[in-house]
Length: 459
Image 1 (cartoon, rainbow, N blue to C red):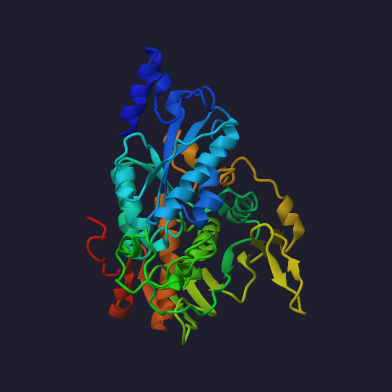
Image 2: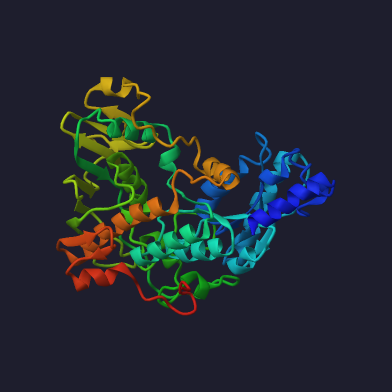
């Protein structure tokens, strides 16, 4: 679908007919850019993560460095958020242009947005339980996709998503933005090139989520399609703590509900496990044995895991341990030293509890390791300065992005295996080639969930 449209654009330029295409924003508004590089983008889900990360991540490139990328439409199941999303995009373009702009379309149904042939690509910034289905429908509609992590609610859904992306030949970038932050690729390159010797252990530190939340049923807000928001998950009464704030964009309650996700083990774990896999050279596989424990809330609405420690052994003998007992980040431990990496601005409590002490985002057992120069014949990481920018570049070039669907799926599936081990409370054995749990029907039953009609992924 896209290639046909772009071919048309190229022909139109040659015949002098392209000045008014697309009708939403003339190409002269943001600067003269090659029409073949013009990308119209729809934002599906325009809540907290979209407003704070995904839409700004794309908007920063509009009309910059020869680009002509535009958010032309927004979609949300909340009518109020659709309007706020339109205002957000219109406001950004008004500021850019120095004059009023009101061209952003609004949709209540993502399927109508996907049917818009003027839209080339979509941002999917919805709750976790909607990720895989929307991504599948988007690539089937011929759209390229930026997909918020984690890649899926279940391993079974993630496999369908990755397979559909491969079959469609669309570009899908998973929002594993640590791949585009300078200290993470640097750490990976050092580990992969043996600067700490042979990796033996990996420690992944994650934050936790509190218990709480009120389960008392409440009226569904006007203009909110709650049934579609629940999607494939069970029909349960509406309450604000189960969903999202009715006003504002604070952290939503659904992040703490197992109905819609697994908690921090996937929510932040998808980032850190992806980075750990990158350094371990296990991006396209997973552990073969997983075990551990977790505490789950005894009361309140929110039911994702609390304090936990889980372990995954890989075929090469390396053991990855994930726990809140470690600093928030990734530490590879080899037979000749270690390397630790985390995000900028992270802090850890002092002995007195406050104030907090800053964490150095990249450090090693020997500081000289960090000064090491990567030789021309050594492993060099995929270079990406910005996750959204890399996605946009790959839409034009048709090259694979830094965080493609299969790699995102493998990171997510590893996190979900750790979650399954938490739930069954005994070791499980995983075949990463067949993607099957071996000899354990109880654990294997957690690889998929019943999908409520009519919101199931259509096979």
